[in-house]
Length: 355
Image 1 (spheres, rainbow, N blue to C red):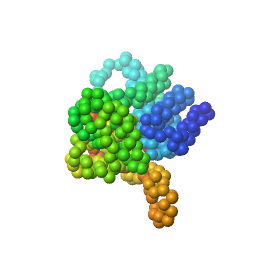
Image 2: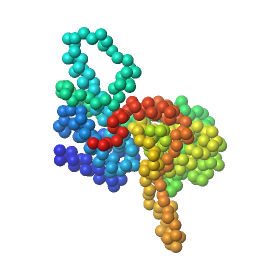
Image 3: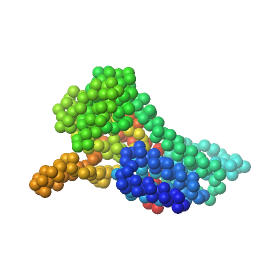
Image 4: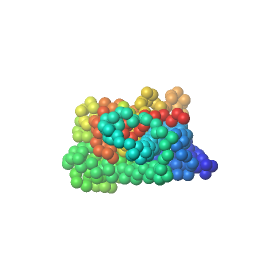
């Protein structure tokens, strides 16, 4: 177990020091660690394995609570574990009852949906030896899904973007970048990119889009409202999607979404389902992180800096009423449908990692 503890300690340290940042990067690292933990540790029951994974997840989430994708991946794996144990239990029960005739051999899908959700597998059942390999295979499929997530999202681009449209976005999002590049293969359109000061990641985004042959214009954040009336669609990336459909996205996103709503411009969010969190925004600031304010107000300002307190938040919280459509790796969904996706991907018992 010491070897696995070292791997957990190493990932915890990297998360605390922000050596690993970004939802995709931390998700891949978390899955890689969980495969090792599950395959190398001794466990024989569902409760033992769930407790093991929750203990690892608890440490990883506490290391950097703002990287919500870590908790999402842990919950997804826990859901897979519970489903595999339930399936093994069901198979074992059927084998034991084959000698008895049952008046009803099938149950309705509605009963399965409402009756089995959140139920705990019976640890007294003799599980097959292939259960460990089945769980690891399911986790590897999640890993493959993450690796192909850009392909599944960008293939929907031609359905959302039409010729001669003006698209607005902010900052740099790899998902939005791939989405727009794929649309440019069949469509000719113009993109306005807000520079997202003080990080100016929008300038990097504009450079990559222009290299792909897309007509791109960088605008200052202060000009977003002024030019919004000319825009046909706003396409945004996000750091996380909360249970109510709200976004945790790069600073400046709320301003752009509010301007779009004022002008009745549709707002589309491109995101993978691994960013969907079952948590609610009871405290908006709990999902935020502040960076060095030197880029906003430098220390060389002297007398002025002693008289003011400067905060440089990296994220915005965007309410769900500002979003019209989510483009995910499983298709397009309105914010009101997210509750269904949460039920399908996470178990109610795993919304918190209490042991």
